[in-house]
Image (cartoon, rainbow, N blue to C red; front, side):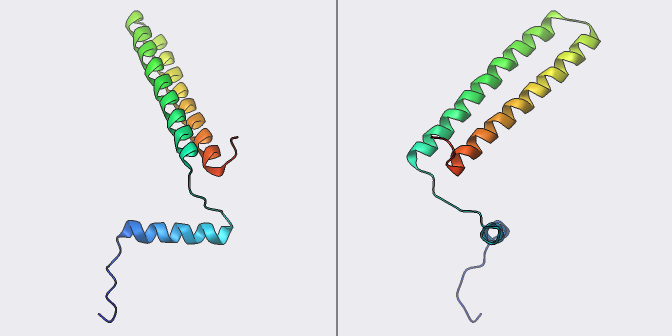
Length: 102
C-alpha cells in the first residue's frame, strides 16, 4: 500500500458520510456542555421512572381483569403510553442538543 493509513470500519465510513451530508445541509454541530449532559441524563432518568411506574400499574391492572377484550384494550393503551414517553423523551433530548432549552 502506498499510504499507511489504517482501514476504517463500516461504522466509521458511515459516520463520515453522515457528517458530510449534515455539513452540506447546513446542520451545525456543537459539542455538548456538562450542563447539557446533565440535562439529558435528567430527562432520561425522569422517563425511565415514568416507564417503570407505568409498567407496575399496567401489570397490576392486568392481574385484576380476566376479560380478553379489556386486556387487549389495556395492552393498546400501555403501548401508546410507552410510545408517547419515548417520543417526548427524544424530543426533549433533541431540544437540549440543539440548545433550545434555557
